[in-house]
Length: 268
Image (tube, rainbow, N blue to C red; front, side):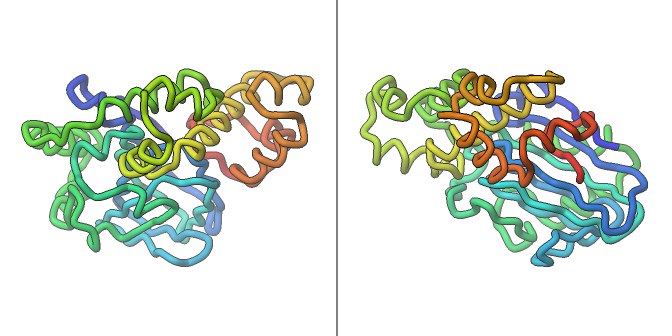
């Protein structure tokens, strides 16, 4: 039902992946969407779906912007047939295509027709009218490649910062990070949030959480206390509290779920 596709090499510095969710589902099926440090444009190809809190109804042939998420959210299907595709930008990737501060859209899901950001309704309609996913990806890539000549240079220090956080699995202290980059903490936090939508601490927390989910999915039995420490948490209690906050589940409940084909979507 869920598939991911890599971008072409020229867009790899900016696009994390393209994805598609397609197939039959149950009415009122709840999908749990976990924070991943990225931002997505979502195109509703066929049937509508609606977030649990009812703030946004996803209509067919429209597109939506999901800003950087700090905690999980739930999506509830309002049909028995689901078809969506998305463009997931890497943590700093969208900043290359727009000057809009991503920090203004943290935890927000917006009808993208209300935004002056990259795509527009006519593009979304053209995309949805194509027959295959491959055609849609080709259209998106041609569009984004045509904008590379006017690309906005991404601050190299912010790219380095996200890379250091990810490579450390979110365990690099912020003070050490600012020392490595020779930046004052306030100045660094302001620039980092502008291009990623997160403070460095928030991005580190999400990166640490994502590493923990990968560890949990790769094991059957474990010493939870030792796992918590290995993943950078103070102790088991701290790990469980953070995991519940970001995923809505305890680690033990998360381990009991069937391992999905996808990384960011799990359903309860």
